[in-house]
Amino acid sequence: MAYVGTPEFESRRPALKAAFEKSRQDLEARLALIEAETEPPADVMSPEELASRLVMDRIPRE
Image (cartoon, rainbow, N blue to C red; front, top):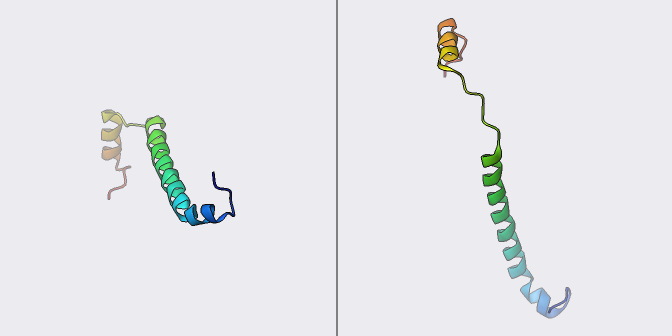
């Protein structure tokens, strides 16, 4: 086991930082997937409501 400040640890520090950063990015990517799966469903317009909005011209056009 290498202790912080020892030559052995300091020589391995860049590799340890890179491994930590990769692990952090992987975890954040997995959390983003989980959050997307657990979000409540968005409001979906019924066909009747969509038709009504189209007829009344209340839907912004892109």
